Amino acid sequence: MKVNQWISEFHNLIAIDNRETLARYMPALPRLIAADGFSMSIQAGFYVWATPRFDFAYYEEVEIGFPSAVQKTLLPYVDITGDVFGYVPIKIVNKIIRKHGGVPDNNLLEAKIEYIARAKISYLASSKL
Image (cartoon, helix red, strand yellow):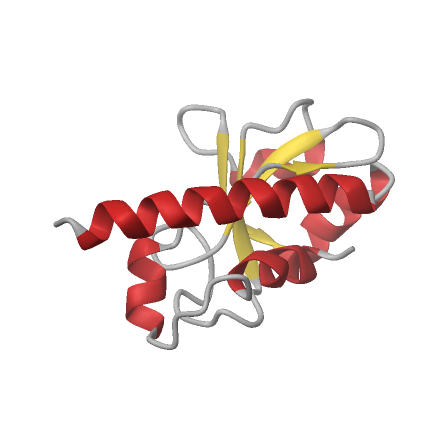
C-alpha cells in the first residue's frame, strides 16, 4: 500500500462534501503500523506540513511524526523537536513503508475502526460549539 492510498482510505470514510469543513474537523489519521511492527504517523491536510493543502486525493509531500525507529531518509526533514518531519516527499514515505513490509489488511481494518470513532467524536464536539 502506498501512502496516498493510506490517506484516501481514511479521507473517503468521512462523507463531507465541503473541503473547508473536512479540513477543519477531520481527525488526525491513525498511525500506520507496518508488517514488521514499525509505525509512524502520516498526516496530510490543511493544518500540517503537507502539500497541497486542499487536495484530498493526491499529496506530493506529507508530515511524518514519531516514527518508532530512526529512518535516516527522514533526517533532512526533521523539525527542531526531532520528532516531526515536514514536507516529506511521497517517494521517500513509500520506500519506508516497503522497507518495513507494507501494511497488513488487519492493521488497516483496526485503523479504520479507530478513525471512524474519532471522527464521530470530533463531529459531535464541533456541533456543540
